[in-house]
Image (cartoon, rainbow, N blue to C red; front, top):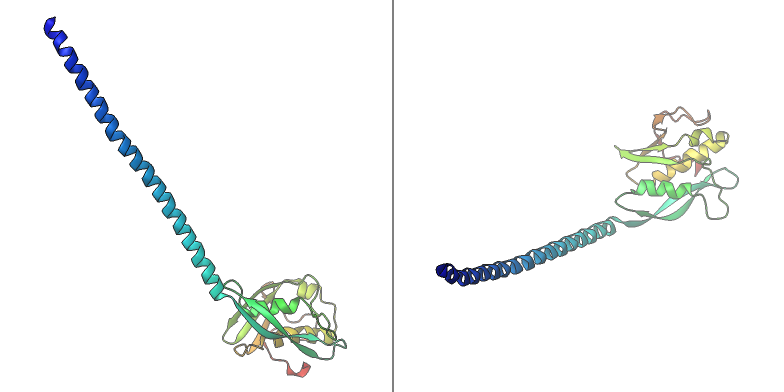
Length: 200
């Protein structure tokens, strides 16, 4: 019994030392884990900001402002008039699309008249081997109300605007991605059309 009583204090002291040692290793470990998490979060945030800045810089580098002539009929509908327009291009919008979208907004100067049918939309523009293939929504055809002169003015405004770019030699007009023979029976649109100097 006396031997047991002598052992008890020693066991108590050993227990205290083990407990203290355990607390000592846990605290640095906990602090280290917290620091690692904060560091990782900070690195991720910095990487995201760097990626965002890089993307913004690329878009700014791709963006350009150009001046191009777009063409509208005069009030008498006898010829097309050139109007200089500033257009904005970007990584998602090429200059051909920008020029046609500017044309489709309609004239802003006196002596010119709008020619595009209501609700007609530009779907796409692609350039291949000097031919600009322009795809419009069905309203270009279904909502067209002009006669032979109006058809010539509309086609001429599209063709002459795009052939302002030297690399565009002719223009092929599609509707909903399909070839069409004509808008309203007056002009053959089954083949690409070169610049229409007869309406200038």
